[in-house]
Length: 87
Image (cartoon, rainbow, N blue to C red; front, top):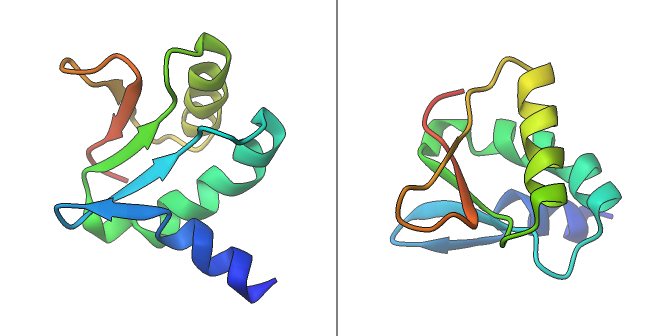
């Protein structure tokens, strides 16, 4: 259980930025993990969430963020990435 917790805290990092990768995860897994990951990494913004081109996965992330008053935007460089600038 602790091992899984650590995995979601720092899914992986690129250039020192926390990145959460939704690939190979089901929507219900992301729904369970994403808010904890955001709060654990809130002091390391911007946070990147890789959703790929799945509108369903983007919708899950946006829904969770909206329910918790967290602003999320789509990357203008890559539409498969959502970015949280501030929590």
